[in-house]
Image (cartoon, rainbow, N blue to C red):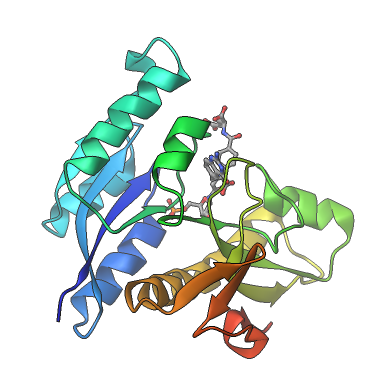
Length: 216
Ligand code: NHR
Ligand code: GAR
């Protein structure tokens, strides 16, 4: 079987990247990781990728005069790997319209909240401050407007009485590691489509397959 090629973009630790690499290693996974690219030379995920024998690149945003120049350099590095899918995994730079349009329909992100709640940064702090009883993570197609693209899958976790941003983040992260490989599997199996701004799985809206419920 022809496996889909993936390029993963990171900025930091790379635990979601690692979860995807491990899923791909496990066999019968329909995608292969062609490269991991970081905008941050110090990202710990680069070391983890190397340890797994995956090609790595750095496109340091500080080396470019503006966002457009950075985005173009990044596009060049990505396209050299001819991926079917580009996956943001803890990638921390907002991408401009030229980049977004170039990868339309083949660019996805994992975001640590139940979108459309808490787009942007510091999601766990904000979820706690809001008094929310559930929180979670979302995998979505990336569009020009940040954290607003069509949602592929979400996982919910309970917010517990003594949670801190750190304990809540850890509970969410476990779910991220489950749903990101799942979303990539669906994409690689060509089972996802977008109609009226919504993601369909096998041509239908299937909440029971698109949501992993709160556990514990
Ligand atoms: N780009 C577009 N156009 N659309 C999206 O949906 C994107 C995107 C780039 C990244 C990930 C996103 C997240 O999951 C993502 C989605 C960084 C910021 C941010 O404010 C916001 C959202 C996300 C990632 N970044 C600052 C910036 O000026 C830098 C912050 C930093 O370096 O710490 O780019 O949350
Ligand atoms: C993850 O929780 C991811 O959802 C979040 O950062 C963490 C990265 O962890 N992403 C963002 O906040 C994007 N702005 P990881 O590097 O270990 O995968």
